[in-house]
Amino acid sequence: MAEDRKAALVRITGRVQGVCFRAWTHDEAQRLGLCGWVRNERDGSVTALIAGPVAAVDTMLRRLSEGPPGASVSTVASEDASSIHAPAGFQITH
Image 1 (tube, rainbow, N blue to C red):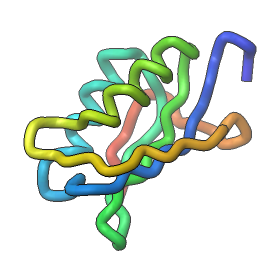
Image 2 (image 1 turned 90 degrees about the vertical axis):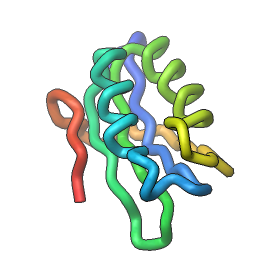
Image 3 (image 1 turned 135 degrees about the vertical axis):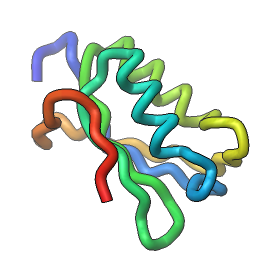
Image 4 (image 1 turned 120 degrees about the horizontal axis):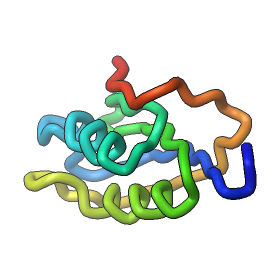
């Protein structure tokens, strides 16, 4: 990944399912021009792969800490994901 680009694999915990977190993440990522995906996990968390310009990824990471109305985010843990191929655009997966 180029120096001005970044990718992060993110796990978000708290009240993040049943509050439109995936749809909100999708919309925010598209607004920021990011690629990747978001999905619910069986343990009640949400996982997302976000990739794009460093500033946009950093902004998205801050936004994920807040989440949509109705969400109550406990933690946002991210790790470098530059070795993971992000799809074009941003998708909600299952």
